[in-house]
Image (tube, rainbow, N blue to C red; front, side):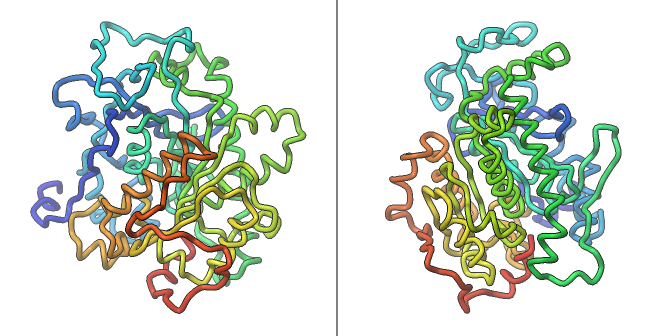
Length: 424
């Protein structure tokens, strides 16, 4: 099958991360929460590490391919192309431990024997962490490009595979396989119906994220005896005082919902203990339509940034997004010209066929590499300094356009493509 796709010239490739640091990958299920992919700055393990991936770990798990086929209503043989894609991440590599920065080109001695569990975290580099939520039909894999690009600039990124039924696939802690939960037959696309249907999903995601933040706050100490050496090392390198939440599309929606309820209930001591660790929020093409009115009206007060695709900046639901951004403490709000909704995910890297990418709305007229660099530049500056880090972003950058909050209705520029993806 791999040869077949290569022959067609359709098989894509997840390109190496944009930053200087090599990126490690840890697969981990958080207690009482969800399975995740954790991306972290890693020590090299060999001369050709930049082109090395785990031989038994394809880009997408084979069982997740079935779920993606069901979600997209495609034959499994077509989505099976994804299992032939290699990823450029290093599984099992030690965490990079330069106290100054993970972006330096300095080499560390190769580890001998077992990985150091790093018992004294104060002696080691502490990395801010971004907990990232996928959109409808997503899995832990499908934002690997974004997550690894951010991580390569000196951050730890946790890609959550939510178990709310909104993803194309997830496996429960008991091993049960669960696929995408479709809306009820005949459900009309109205605010009331969408909110009623989606709010249970949002609540489930909120609880999963809260459990992860609580685990990071304690650096996994309650589970220390059951963790591997690498797991201990990764969690002890996390700066538990610099936690950010983010997401794409419905992942942005659930992040907004979670943030709002964190702030609403911050007088609760348990919530407050978790909430104080969260420094800000990252929204990539947020789908605001399922957000209850109180969330849109009151917004969130910790720093946030919002980057939209052009298709979402001009679709018929922009008024809801503008209302949410306008009522929030938004440090940066923009859209990228010539981009489509799925351009924030791995979609543009899954095939080398420009024809397929255009027809399937995986990439817009703006090249994926251009839009990706802009997104990573904005996001990493914000994660470095959520209050002032974005001041220099957006000045004279081609394609990046400032969003003005007075825009409350969709433009006639909305296309058939943006209408089709407006519910994702």
